[in-house]
Image 1 (cartoon, rainbow, N blue to C red):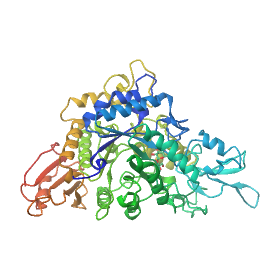
Image 2 (cartoon, rainbow, N blue to C red):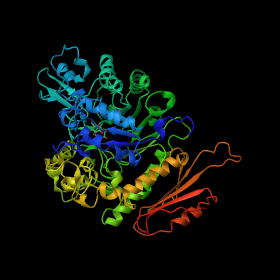
Image 3 (tube, rainbow, N blue to C red):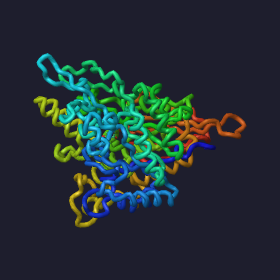
Image 4 (cartoon, helix red, strand yellow):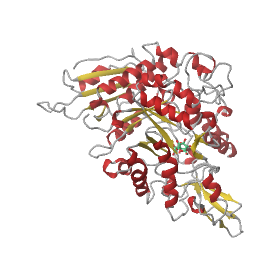
Amino acid sequence: VGSTPWWKDATFYQVYPASFKDSNGDGWGDLPGLISEMDYLHDLGVDVVWVSPIFESPQKDMGYDVSDYQAIYAPYGTVEDVDVLVQECHSRGMKVILDLVVNHTSIEHAWFKESRSSKNNPKRDWYIWKPARYDDQGIRHPPTNWRGYFASSTWTWDDRTQEYYLHLYAADQPDLNWENADCREAIYEETMRFWLDRGVDGFRIDTVNKYSKRQDFVDAPITDPESPHQPAPEMWCNGPRIHEFIKEMNRKALAPYKAVSVGELSNTPHPSQVVPYVSAAAGELDMVFEFSVIRLGTGNGFGAKYIYQPYPLSKLKGLTETWQSFIEGTDAWATAFIENHDNGRAISRFGDASTPEAWRRSGRAIALWQATLSGTLFLYQGQEIGMVNMPASWGIDEYRDIESRNFYAEAAASGSRERLEATMKGLQILARDHSRIPFQWSDAPHAGFTTEGAAKPWMRVHENYRSVNAAQQAHDPDSILSFYKHALRLRREHRDVFVHGSFKLVDRDDESLFAYIKESAPVAGAAAAVRRKAVVVLNMGAETKACVDVARAMKCAAGDVRLLVSTLGGQGGESTAKG
Ligand code: TEU
């Protein structure tokens, strides 16, 4: 599509390094393991590999707590392994981006150690320190009543210097103070230019809308009277200087390298708030992840995140439409994704894994849905082989994530059996751990994730690996993996329609069919205003439906339609039809 930036047409693939491939038998995935599977990714149709954090870290939040941005966590490998990864990607015409976690560091980072050493330390102001509040009885309280993402106060008391520091996530993840210009410059130099100079192609930027906090540090309104800590995202999301900070980051550290950027934008559900981050003229980010679709089913309010909220298919359809069309009439760009390391598996959430056939059809329907959406496509490891959530029979002890464990502990401490059961049920659908179990490569022991005779993988391997694995699917033309390859090829071949086309919902209120029309811009050079169209019909229900009638009802012009049909309840498969 003319002079389109390369990343618009690219397919990105997120690797969760601890769980992708273990080359040395320690039960923990690593860079050499990832490098050994570059041909697999290339063959799938991946253009860009995004590697979740691999930096030195105490691993309190799986590497999203970085203690040294320039060193690699030893179980993953070395800085030289990253160089090899870059070469191996580039030699295949692929690219690689790293995860940039700069809203916070680990408490073990040298910057924080200095900052907490004394109030006069030059780096004191690199983090956010505030005095305590005392009540009438002289009891100490945090500076504000804010609740963090991991079910606790956002403030932790530091005995030595007698102040609280701010952390939106775990107490081990203190927030950096972006108001401090030296701190910002250190971020650009030590975390960004360092890796870009080594040939990395860009970054997935963690929590990108949380760098500018409101500076008045006032209490949040009380929305949860039961809790001492109140949800307060408006205090730190999309704050007063956020666009200034991101423009500066772009000018100083991204643009000079032509680095690609995709930022994570939670708590920002209004298109008008999202466009400024990704408007080409604004010079901020190339792309963002907006979470309205992927967060479907999560409870309202932070304490209730894992109290599952059922929703009708029409809601999923409506949100897909919003986030497909929000860029219309702007110079912004969208992304398409339905899995990542912070959410349950798509088949378990949006499909049906109750029988092998339903599972296969669900996986294919999800593949077709994603591969026909406009914007840049992001896949998550294992999505392409239809990996599903951990079995419901696994107890809380199999969950490793700090967030899952904290929410479970909070529910347990409430003394309400009902709440605990509801939380566990919600975790079984939504927990971050589901996407973090080892990748299922084959039917070898430990699903071929680790070497023979190796240590136990860091997370339990799903029992279904003998039937759900990449090796088996590679040779099966009807497998989910083969379907992804095919769908990605179609996407590339017709990218004017699928990547760049407009999106229009059909039968908005139908609660089992998810149908839409993708339409290209007028074809250049054609005499009349010819547009290319595709009608996509996904049967998300259990009953067979006459999908072709939907296309007829759309009055598609003969000859210019390729109809893709994927059914959950019918014969399955895909057919092409004219007119
Ligand atoms: O997540 C930030 C984020 O806003 C959510 O996606 C997150 O899962 C949720 O708010 C938790 O309730 C990013 C990373 O993707 C996540 O893995 C990290 O835990 C988090 O930042 C902190 O670095």
